[in-house]
Structure formats: C-alpha cells, structure tokens
Amino acid sequence: MATPGAGPLLEVRGISKRFGAHAALADVTVTLVAGEVHAVAGENGAGKSTLMAILSGGLRPDAGELLWEGRAVVLGDVRSAQALGISMVHQEPQLVGSLSVAENVGLGRLPAHGGPLRLVDRGRLRDEARRALALVRADLPPERRVETLGVAERQLVAIARALHFGARLIILDEPTSSLSMAETESLFLTLRALRERGTATFYISHRLEELRALADRVTVLRDGRVVTTVPLAQTSNDALILAMSGRELATVDAARDERPAGEVLLEVRGVGRRGRLHDVSLEVRAGEIVGLAGLVGAGRSRLLRTVFGADRADAGEVRVRAADGSWRRVGTLRDAVAAGVGLVPEDRRALGLVPVASVADNIGLVTPPGTRRFGLLRRGRLREFAARAVETLRIKARSLDAPVRTLSGGNQQKCVLGRWVGPDARVLLLDEPTRGVDVGAKAEIHRHLRELARRGLAILIASSELPELLALCDRIAVMRQGRLVSELSRAQATAPEVLRLATGTR
Image 1 (tube, rainbow, N blue to C red):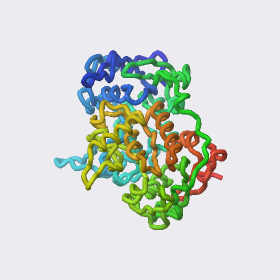
Image 2: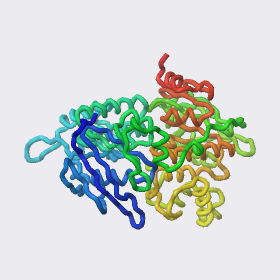
Image 3: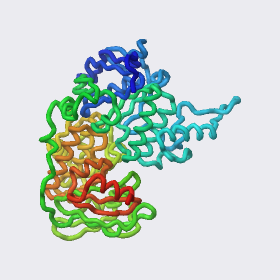
Image 4: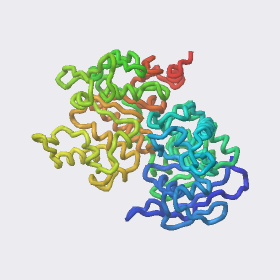
C-alpha cells in the first residue's frame, strides 16, 4: 500500500500527443507514489496505450513534462526508461519466439563469463530465469522455446522479464487477459507483495472487478483526457462505466433472449487428437450460443481449431448441416469455409489480421461470396461487403482504406468477426472474442453475437471469462485435460459448478 504522505514517484504534468489531426492525449496529468497500484481505465481509443507508450519511452510527448522523484526527465527510448526503473508488459507479449524462455527473460542483460569472449553464462541465465518465473508462479522449463508456449504462458514470461529487470514502476497492459482464474490470483499475490516492497504499478484493465481487487486508485481517460482520478473505494462500477463511455451501458448489454433453438447445425462426434483431445462430442443448434469453459490448457482452443479444420483430427468427425438440409463433413480449412464455418481466433493480431492491410482487405481476407468472377477478384463487391460489415458492426475507422493496425483492439476484433457474418454463414466459432477490449466494445460484441444467433447461426464460444459465458450462453460445455466432462443448461450453470467441473474438484 502507498505510504501516506509519501512524495510522488512519478508525476505526469500536462502531457499532450497528436497524430496528425487526431489528439490522442490532451493535457493529461496524473501522479503515482511508491507502493501504489494505480489503475488506468477507459474505452479503447481513450489514450491509455499512448500514455503508457510515453511513460515507457516508446513515444515522445508533444507537450508537458515527466518528473521522476521530483526531477524532470526525458525518456528518449525504452532503454532509458528501463534504466530509470520503468518496465512495461504489453497486452501482446513482445517476445522472441525462436529464443528460449530464459533468453527472453534475460534479453538485454544476459549474464556472461569472464574473459575476452564474454560468452553467455548459460547456467546463471537459467538460474536467474527460474527465480523470475517463480515470482509469477510459472512452472516453465527455462530452455523451452517461447514459440511453443500458449498465449497465457507467454504473458507470464513477459511479466517475469519485467520483474527480472528490477523495475521500481511496472506498467501492465491487460496482463490477465489470457490467464486463468488461478493464474490471475497468483499474479495478484505477486503484485501485492511487490506493493508491500514499495514497487509502483500502473495497471491497465477493462475488468472492473479486477481493478477493485487490486488497485488503490483509478484514473479514467476518455477521448485523450482525464475524466477523473479517484480511490476505488470511493466509486461504483456504474460511475466508472459512465466516466469511461459517457453513456449508460444497461441498454447496450441487455439480458439474454429467451429463444427456442432450431435444428442441429454443428455436430462433433468422438473427435480426438493424439495427446490433446479425447473423444469429444457435442452439438450446436441454429440460434444457440454454446460456451466452452475450462482452465488454460483444457483443450478449448484446440477443439475450435479442429472443428474449423485448422488442426487435423486423428479420430471422429465434424459435420455441418447445409441450407438444403444435407450434411457436409469438415476436415480441412477449405471444407469449413465452404460449409459456412468461420473462426475468430484467440490471438487476433498474429492469426486473425494483416496489420498493414486495410480494413476492407482484412474483412475480405476470406473471399466473400459474389466477390469473384471467372477467378478474378471484384474489388467493388469486396468493398460493398466490407462497408456492410463496418455499418452492421459499428466499426470505427477513418475509412475502408485505413490500415487495420490504426484501429482500437475492439474494432480490430470486429473486423475479424465481420469476415464471417455474410449471408452464407452457418456456424461461428469464437476463441476469447472480447480479450483485451473495453466494456463498451465488449457489450457491443455481445449484442452482435445475440443478433447473429437470432439470425439462425450456431455459435460456439470459448472464453476464460466465466461471467461472460454465464451472461451470454444458452449452454456451457466444460472441458478438462482435453475431455468434455459435462454440459450444463442455462439453469444449471453457476460459477461454482463450472469451476468445480473445470478443476475436477468433488
């Protein structure tokens, strides 16, 4: 906990930043004291990432000043920020996949043997990595290549790296977006211990209950400006949502529809993949939203990839009912797309988007129906398809030609979703569809998914956020160690019951 009366560790005074005509930050002022966990909240595009990029040395402000322990400083680059004692862990971990866990933890400060060659001391490197990983309770072999890790494991490595550098201020950008509840609580224990030792934290998250469990104060940004800075104990979730969005969200994230399910559109029978999936069977009906719950590594993502044909099954089969009532077997990506199956992947930036390409080209990445003639792409039709998706999903972009990397996380996710919502869509698979998006964008995505279900799509969604599944789904299938261990109806699905099944607790 911050020491009462302690002087600020960091002062941000009147910081402004423009990108062309767009004011990303305008006269932002905030202070942080040693031992404080200070939350930064706001919708995507509010300026949080820009502010943190400035504080971590990645960007220079156009106006304003930064004071570190009362002394004015200029952070010319990331290295200068780290030398001062500031480290940032990004939402998408910035790691080198071809290097080992230990090499990533120590990258930039690799221990070396004495002598003229200064060769890397591998034993010491592994020992230092183990100590850093222990701080985040990550039981990972130091020699394992990072490219073989899942998203949650990579996030833990990135956090361990920041702790390894001994930062006095750690900036965490959505650090738990890919973590299980157990991993999240483990991280919280680590951050609370760091707080007791005087380490300060800027903590960016869209999960309000998470902020309440951890942070001392919260600063809310909207349209690049500070709306309020207030102790968490002195404000409500409704007040924070109103401050972030400028509007009430109760009407946006409305209750689930009571709608009858139609005929079975997706049928998974006895699907297995050696060492990963074991005899998984389930059905999803038209107009139904079915959730996949389970701990990280339970097999949810692997099942979705197998249903989509991205991973080959060793046993069983996946079938989709066509509009004429016939069944189509899905064994490859080509089969899935032809059958009207779409996948919104977990890691949208690495697997779902081409960042340098335009909004229109990303939405049309899988060629929509009617956009080719005699094998040639009809760009006019493609733009019409993209424009309808932008309008339907309320994607905020300067134009169809804007690079998708310039969009907020929520709008990037809508671009991936827009790719699969054409007239031939039958089944929609979503893996962590609201990971790293703000409360407003999350409510909009939920609303769009309900509308797609009303249109008759069969929707299968995997999420680590149990409240999301409980709020959105008609049924929840619980996975554990590659097996589907239970299916719960809406009436049966409660948080304690899902967790009991996911953990195998009796």
